[in-house]
Amino acid sequence: MSTFKDLLRVAFNGLFARKVRTLLLLLGPMIGVAAIIASVGLTDSAKGDLKAKVNKLGTNLIEAAASSSFGGQDPTLPQDAVERALTVTTVEKVSAVVELANIVVSPYEEASDVFETVPIPVLGTDLNLPDVLEVDLVSGRWISDFDAQKGARSAVIGVGLAQEFKFLPGEIRTIELRGIPYAVVGILDSVELEPGFDNAVFISFHSAEIDFLDDDAEPNKMYVRCVEGTEKESADALRLAVNLGGPQEITTEIKSEALELAAQSDRQLQLIVISMGLLAIIVGGLGIANVMSISVIQRSAEIGIRRALGHTRQIIAIQFLLEA
Image (cartoon, rainbow, N blue to C red; front, side):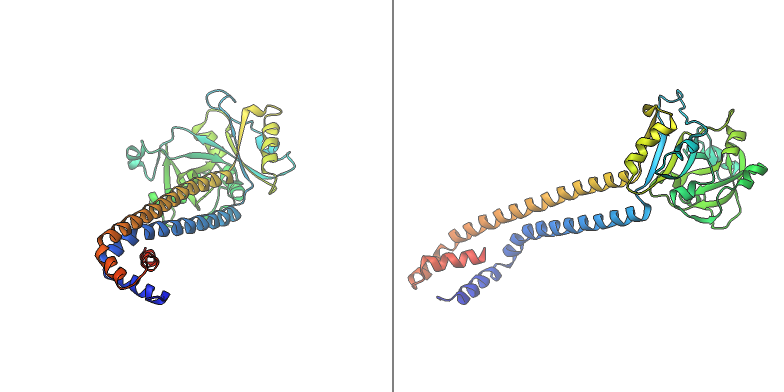
């Protein structure tokens, strides 16, 4: 048995003669390699998903909110905050909202007690929010000038809330806001850059002033679309423009950065999985080395016979290495 082909045949015969041991030895490295391949695949898939999502949603959406020191306990932005924001040359469009507190939302009056402890956001907003967010309506329409002029109590709800309240597309129904009936005129599609909007209720600033606020509705948050590539510069300029030189009184957030942070968390998890896969390969390799060394000891009689038949130490060593 001097040829390499003969050595391979004997090595494979040795492996298949002990099928269970061979299978158990292979499991560790197999699991490790599979984990690494899966992690690399997940990483590439996550990168592709993130790139597609950012391309779809855009990187140029900025959220500007009044900080806690602006206006005391319930900080608000100036009433002309939208006009001030539009003075920034890199800003393309702006929409303002006011978050209303302590409003119980229920699908009908009899359910008010059930939903009293369920926090559902209610926001007064202007006409531009879907355009700025670049989100369509699943059905119906957005709040219009006509609603404000006629004092109509019209509301748009998020797609998640519509599912919770079992609304059907195109269905004419009302919801109760602190016991006041509002006609649902539209359902807003999912807002990936602002997930809280999926379960929110949107009404006009006029309705918010009449039904829920003692004074004029002052926004406490704005959503701004700027020229792509100018996000950081626009965010800095907004802080100055909206507060007329007091950058510490307003906070800005580039919404696409939240997606990137989430992706970084996913990558860290994938690195952990890859590390575990490498560990499994190392442990499996050590297990193979250990078992093969024991195998040499257990097969000492076979080795003696083959030595007596003229096989050299080198040939026998190569066979065991091939089995390993």
